[in-house]
Image 1 (cartoon, rainbow, N blue to C red):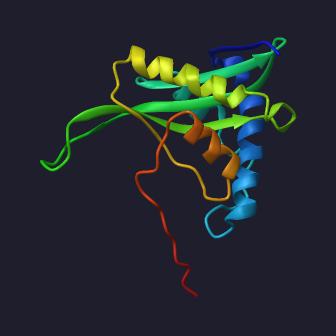
Image 2: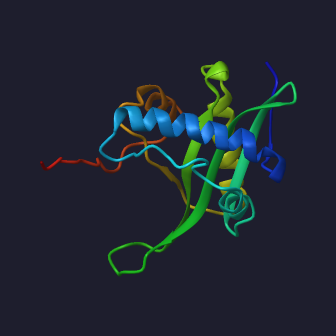
Image 3: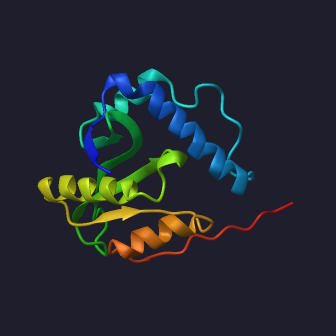
Length: 159
């Protein structure tokens, strides 16, 4: 299976919006206390264009036989605004989504490797991401790629 990775473009909007909808539904099914049913579309074209054209942002698409099958979006952050934190520039993976038909075929791994290459080219110090506890497959992939837990998010529902 030959997968190619390229920068996202305006032509990818419909595909990416559909994958966002899939991901949103997955998260909503596990955390209805956080996620509401979206207005359609959940991310309009102008918002999407701001992501693909943002300074310090990267939006990559995976293709199989010329057909989009997944994406990764991330951006650059800076830390060290208070004296106890070291000054650093790092990448944040905001979203990685692979179409269900193409999952477990190494596509997310290839997207993350391409993201890492971008972060190195940008001379960033680290890559950070968050993963929901229900997403055990993604967590295993991230750990296999060298990511390590640094915090644990917790929640308590009241009422």
